[in-house]
Length: 382
Image 1 (tube, rainbow, N blue to C red):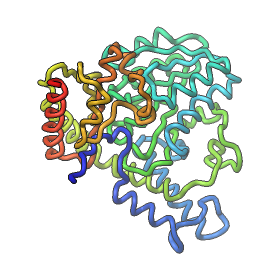
Image 2: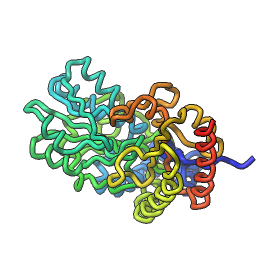
Image 3: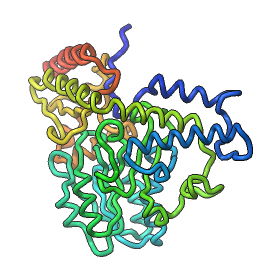
């Protein structure tokens, strides 16, 4: 049996060979297995050196000081630390701006903050899935303390104008957080150019291991975060807990690779994505969801109007894809992201997310096109 073509890179990526090798060197005796917080012997010093080298590699990807990188278990924890940290330090007073199309790792903590008394403005994107700076400008208030908007939407790939929004926030004296889980390693994430104060990352979205991530915290606002993890004072007090050296090292190596390969991979994956779209756009009732101009190079979200989405997913046996976020894939409800963009329940149900990556080839795309066309034409004729 021929293995299906993997086109679900937005859900997760495989660990790169170099990252896996670097991780393996931190697991067993006599390699760098020790606790990096053990500063009384050589084994601990060696582990700490590995951790700090990885911190520098992630900092290089973000264009920041390594001391502004805080290790976490992934973007979900990073988001919680950013959002809850800001408002717990304010005794849950003040105003927060976010959007209805954020990942659940933002939406659920924000709803929790609402229950605690934080006032929230939920912005709705334009038809192409983008939140523009004028919407943020109109929502800003004297008591606004934080704006949290994702950089790249996980379902449709639309890119928000974070640098413009960040400039507005700076002028207003408001902190800006962005969930960059879908952006890091795929598009430029220089924190100074983006004017962000807090940025969440997840290693498994750019060929690092699952279970590790980071939160960029601008030095000027580090004292403004209420702690979420207590016990030991690790990460300059911002996130206690013994670091998983192998996970951290894997993320660092993946960040190094992503930074070095980004320009070439951007162009290559965007060309493959466009090749895929060109091969299926002539099908009846097919249209593309999200922004064409402002889109991640790996995302292609397509509505196959009139075709039952569940049947379509089950029929695409030769292509591994999803109908949206992996975190909500068990739900039978239509995508809340697509509905917020104006799609009907039926069209949202009939939409598929294709996402490409480092190991996608032209041959994969051509085979996927042929299979998709056969399946859709058969379902439309049924």
